[in-house]
Length: 164
Ligand code: SF4
Image 1: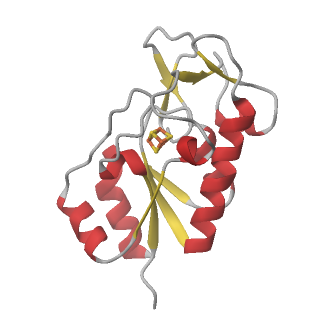
Image 2: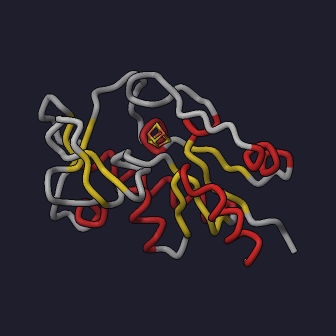
Image 3: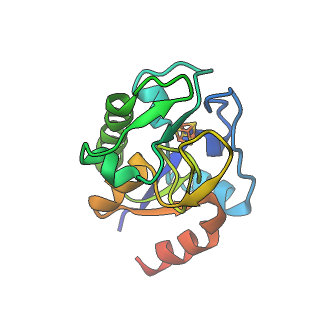
């Protein structure tokens, strides 16, 4: 049986693609193992959608989450007020397409991002406040049956891979 592939946020493998040109490198023996097994499919949805790095920080509007952005009833905004919902939805669609083409049933995504976040989001007011909920990419992957794990749940992802 083919090994399950894992869609992984590019910043998790150390690419400095976050809005402020930083990475979110996760150094963990499992990352090394999965890399050696050829499981990792890295992608930055925002860069893939055409954003440059660095770019303005963006948050999902207060009180709403990724699935509402996908449904067109909430928006993603940069801190200067520019709406970037269409670009974020495009990034999610491209991430889903990449995951499906590569046969990924799992994703390991950076938490807190309006794209990749899965357990928490920033408030939408650019005040560093947080709330529970997922981003646009995590919501679209989950809708399509791909199990999403944050970087803090790497051991749970290993357990899910073993069960699959
Ligand atoms: S969109 Fe995802 S992969 Fe790209 S920098 Fe943000 S968290 Fe990392």
